[in-house]
Image (tube, one colour):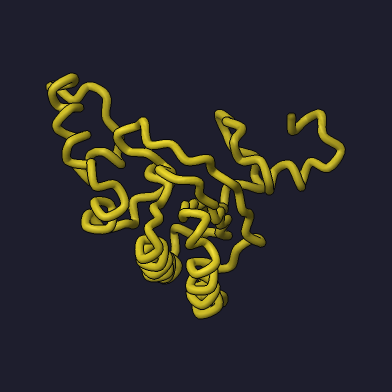
Length: 168
């Protein structure tokens, strides 16, 4: 897709769904976040998120945000969107090697996630591990059930990730 498009820079900014063994240099210093909020509450969340982003704009620069409709479905144990929702996608210009940037990112993310949770939303689980365990449980109340089932099916925890290890 990237090679065949006439507007490669637009494709890179808007389609991070492609998987690369090594990401293009333009994406090396970016970090995505997704906040999924029920459609009925999205306006209220967006107002709160706007306040947070304005307050942190100098320390957390980013590309313009994107939005995506997410159809509801609660068949999964940890559903992304139990009801029809809208996803706020942020693409930060990241400098993770900077302790100052990392602290600002953690503060801003905590505020955004609290605003999201207050409106009945949740975050995309594996993009980062900034959420506290309490925030994770609020967003995904069946987390403990998931961990118990995973331990039953994979007692040696052969299949794991840094995300799972942090929150189990």
